Image (cartoon, rainbow, N blue to C red):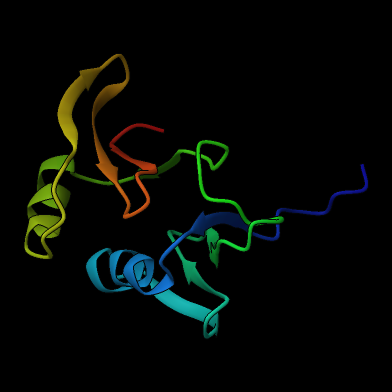
Length: 118
């Protein structure tokens, strides 16, 4: 195989500052790289998540972006902690086949799932 490992996962936004507030200020992910007006990269639970400003070419916001899932130790505690940052579940908690989960929405409407299961 020619692929060594993943380098990053990229999502696109139409409002970089609004997206930065969500991923950095509200979810408290650390910024590892940033180019003002273009993109920022955060350490999202050991995932290099790159948030790019839409450019109409490679970076287009919309339904082609992935759903992002994060494992948490306690869904209830995580949701309570996020509420302190004005982040609330869009759906859930929901009793899933593999345990409870909840759906958040980022500023561009992208689904972010929090789950206690792998």
